[in-house]
Length: 99
Picture 1 (cartoon, rainbow, N blue to C red):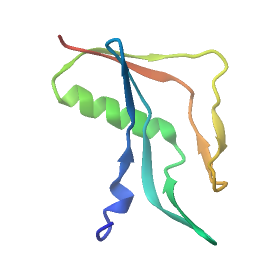
Picture 2 (cartoon, rainbow, N blue to C red; picture 1 turned 135 degrees about the vertical axis):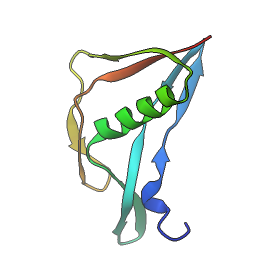
Picture 3 (cartoon, rainbow, N blue to C red; picture 1 turned 180 degrees about the vertical axis):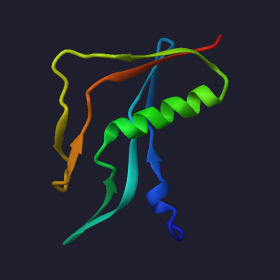
C-alpha cells in the first residue's frame, strides 16, 4: 500500500464460463482494524460500485447493451465480516459485449 491508494481500490473478481462472465465488485474506503486482524473496509452502498463498473465498461466502447435484472428474494442488507453494514437493491447488471 502506497500513500492513499488503498481507498481507491476496487475488488472485481470474474468467472468466465461458456462465454458468460460473472463478476462482483466492492469499493475499498479504508481499513478496518481489530485486535489481531486487518481488513479492508468497503463502501456500504454496493449499488454505487456496480453502477461505476457498468459505466466504465460502456465508456470503453465495447458494450452492445446492458440491463438491470431483478432476482427473486435477494439479500438487500447485511453485515460484513467485521460487522459493518452493507446494502443493495439486489439487482444484477447484465452487459452484452460487442462481438
